Amino acid sequence: MNRRDLLLGTAGASLAAALPRTGQAADPPIKIGLLEDISGDLASIGLPKLHGTQMAVDEVNATGGILGRKLELIHLDPQGDNARYQEFTRRLLQRDKVDVLIGGITSASREAVRPIVGRQNAFYIYTNQYEGGVCDANMLSVGAVPEQQLSTLLPWMVERFGKRVYTVAADYNFGHLSSAWGKSIMKPLGVEFVGEEFIPLGVSQFAQTIQNIQRAKPDWLYMLDVGAAQSSFYEQKNAAGVRLPMASPVKIMLGFEHKRFPAGVMKDMYAAANWFEELDTPEAKAFVARWRAKYPDEVYINDMGYNAWVAIMLYKQLAEKAKSTKLADLRGAMADGTLGVDAPEGRIVIDPKSQHCSHRMRLISVDGENKIKIEKDFGDIQPFWLSQVGCNLLQSNPREQYTPDNLPRR
Image (cartoon, rainbow, N blue to C red; front, side, top):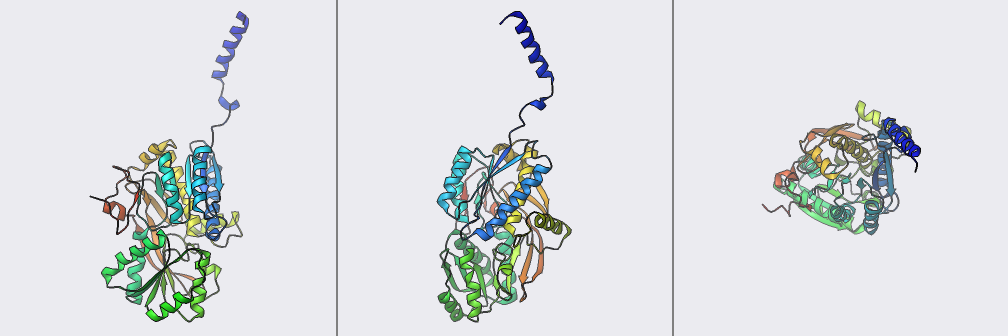
């Protein structure tokens, strides 16, 4: 290289350094890995989760993204298969290098994913209501938990309808643990559990269960069934003349059975919900209007879809407060207990000890015309149980799931 070329090269480098960076590549996107079932037995409730995430990503990108970076959504459909959940989790974290992993419908799918997330030291957001108890610093839980749903709903049912209860539950950890929660809440109230059945996922014939209920003569049914097949129970029990009040943490706002079944099938079903599409507030109406404009054929905006939207908004707040997408920085942004979002249900705040969220809870019921009625507004309820029993993610990370029968060692 001659002296002239060297001088020109030096001058060019100096000039390039002084010029704006408009000619350079934009900052890389923030990658969001999404695992949601949109085919298989859970497709009807999983599709709104995909839509809620897509809508939130579009809304965030329309306002400049997060930290000046656009969001890139990578969605995979595990089809309800936990082996696929594990395979796709590894793919998203190791090959696609996503910044955050979101999704999973059943508790079994969540538990299939969590160990892999822990080994990769990744950040995982679980968006569903669930049976509670996960104390894991790698996971942020967005949905409602038993102290928000069952501690409100079940005592109200006992007082209103009586103390003889029959439980019908899906035969996996959600059903078993939610049944255990029901017992821990209702036994001190003098409840007699006159029957309890755990039904494998995919079962759609309930003649024997209905006969068992008729013989037991309960005052009401505690329903913990999951999936399209198990929902066949409701039409079958009505056809058999069983017309009992029912309570559930997963019916109506999650499975929108009042939109899927003929009028009368879900009559006298009661649920405690942080979101349901019929919520009549200005914020909720505006949210529904935006959703319907984007997805006019959606059967129902269920709480899974809504929580999926909330998850992205919480992630935006976390990353912008942390000025980072790294797990340690995100957790630091939660630490003072003030981080949250103003959502259609009301203000949602993350509890830093458990990394679960507060929710505005309302007790709803279905009438004979499939109309929703608000029976009671419980107001804002914190996810208090985990911290009460000793989960404190500010001090340790046990990565355990605790239950009323499996408490932390003191």
